[in-house]
Length: 399
Image 1 (cartoon, rainbow, N blue to C red):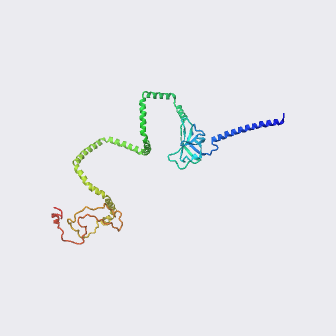
Image 2 (cartoon, rainbow, N blue to C red):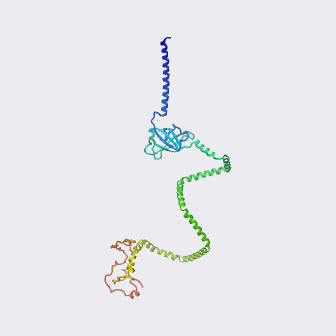
Image 3 (spheres, rainbow, N blue to C red):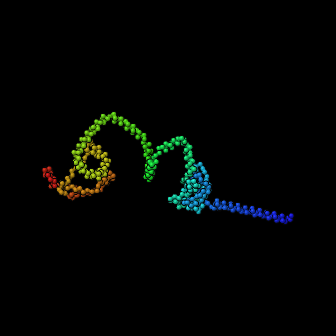
């Protein structure tokens, strides 16, 4: 055989093999490249951690991450711990800017049996800043799956004896037999009552909180309250023993009330009139009560000084006496009284007097004629005699 032909044949077979291997390698590369693109290997992502009480049964890696119904990322990893689960999210950095920093997270399900996804919950008042990469957000709620519900139900049923459950259900069925309409009406009315009660639940909660404080107060005063009950027991026993004397007291009180009632009925008009007449006087006393109080308080500190002046130094009362000119006699109509003083109560210098000081003189319009001026000289003419005053009366006053 020709050697050149053998070499050419070998070279041709080797080339086809190399071409086939190259084709397979390219196909594998394309598949790997497409898988990497599908997995987001060439996409820049921002990582966010979510702390949840649990991850749920059907939350798996590659689950969707949404905000306001728009998909913005995927679940990269789920780490289960004793106190819950930590979920690592990979989110598009541009889409992450749409999530406010105060957003919450809940884990939802598309259907009752569908797979779960992570949803960012935007509050009513979102923050102006966006969520930063590397942040940790706490999940507020996780949708309960039917599997979990059935598991809890199975755990409960496992603790119940079947024969007792059967007897209970039989008794319940017997009790409800023929009463469907009444039971339905009861449910309707209960729903109506609950709807009416629902707006008052905050008030009820506040009342319960106050009730806790009241019960704490009762707990603190329980010992004095029990002592009071014991004392009341002793008092009631004493009343029981002295019931005869108590009856006599009540009889006397009844007689006294009859007597007082008759007196009051006879003097009802006069008593009402007296009370009406007392109103102006009591109103005036009420208005000048501060002045009365300050006069009494002002005289109190002067009592020791008065005792020293009047009886503290001598066995009798020490007094200085002198003769002063008498005042002008009563003159009609100049000396007629006039009720025209105003200004209300005044206590200036009575309680808080400063030594060597004098209070301001208060001028009031209380005289029908000229203002009062003290007499500075002796006068013996024009003065009425004592017999004139006794037998003829005062000027301006009828006999």
